[in-house]
Amino acid sequence: MVRTNLYLPTYQKEKLEQLALEENTSASEMARRAIDAYLIWRDPNYSPHPKLQSRNGDSSPV
Image (cartoon, rainbow, N blue to C red):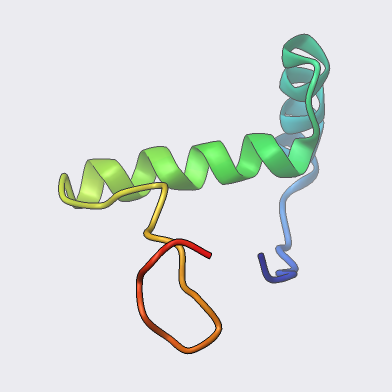
């Protein structure tokens, strides 16, 4: 996972935090879910769980 900074309008940040409390999770997790939903909508072949990469670059499980 990589750290990414986003600038959100106050109303989006507040709603995200409210939903996170209702789901008993973090606002970051809610944002990741929203991004996955958008990416699936844009590309039905998108997988929110890509294959794991080993240290030598092949796609076999670590």
